Image 1 (cartoon, one colour):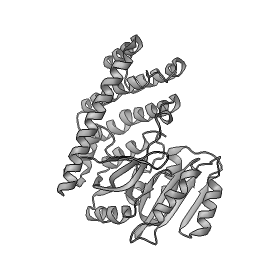
Image 2 (cartoon, helix red, strand yellow; image 1 turned 135 degrees about the vertical axis):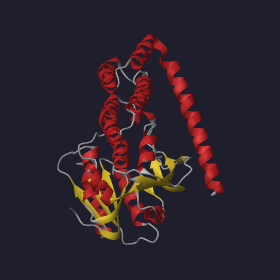
Image 3 (cartoon, rainbow, N blue to C red; image 1 turned 90 degrees about the horizontal axis):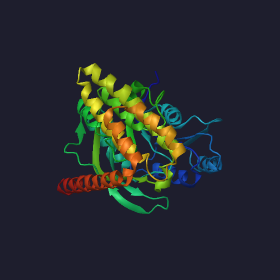
Image 4 (spheres, rainbow, N blue to C red; image 1 turned 90 degrees about the vertical axis):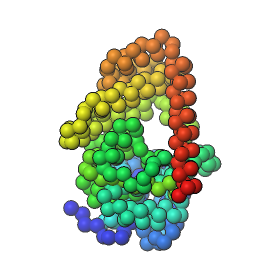
Length: 339
């Protein structure tokens, strides 16, 4: 097993065809307050743009930057696993190459992670930015306590991936015990990892300070069928393997997992009946949806969607999402101001 050096930190950046953004991500890591000697590792998943030229220049400018280009594409999960495994640091940060760390990210989260020895990772509130670096919103998460234990995190995860963004500071030992993302899906891999860490007994720390910027692309970036297909495969592995195994180890009621799985599948059904998904694409997606959950509620939802009720369900889902987000952000902001 790789030995880690106490007090050492590495920012790990998996990238693919994001030459326009990767330099900013690297620079944001190098400019961390009070941690001038951290290292940055960039793993290029066989990009076809000019990422190699950008990274060569960054490596020449700053010896703290390490860069590796894979000769063939590994996929999101394996590329992320590869780069997270390379440093011998005690703490590793996963930063996607289009996201940005604000200057105090490492200083603040490192202190909070060290204050909670049972925490496997730490995360924070973020600014949401678009492809032009314009801040669109601030995303908080209402949570009464800074630290939640592993069992609590596991139960709460049935309601969704309990972070505001996939910009996380990990204990390297926790990642090794969870075997990183190896053998995991290429979509929802972050959600899956959080469940497996909770299953291992690791809690997590959330700081409601805005410490990073998370880039959200236009809707067209996330609605094509191949991404929906990957997402469904990821959720299927999560709800048919990771959650059931974790609940079985604790002797918990598997009905909770089944009910959560159905809720997720019903919501997802509406997404694959949006106008921009073609009938041909839907022919692939519906069987994948039934692979996640083929119960009566899901089949009824699909039938109603086929009959033309998609706009109704989409409107209800959007209203529910907006209400939940508004309540969550209001409560989180109130707590932030009070504390």
